[in-house]
Length: 126
Image (cartoon, rainbow, N blue to C red; front, side, top):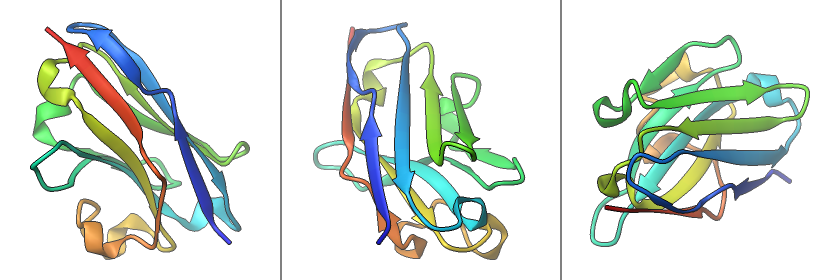
């Protein structure tokens, strides 16, 4: 059974940095498309960043130049480095996996993912 566990969230001041991790208990890590989503109260879940095992990445416009998604295949772990954080980045962050390459679907479509973590909270104060 696939299990995803996020960590690394917390409370920081505007301009600060955090690194989120998603540790995966999974068979065939290299065959999955992986992504980070976030959801704030009263808002829909939105895609933040996505990556496949060959390296191509995608970011939502609001985080380009500030966030970096990466993976460690040997450790079956997904990361999201977040720099220059803003109050509008405040949300619950979730990792999500799909057992296909990212090229077969829209990486930011929440309905296309098979597996989800429980989330880690990120709060940015002004």
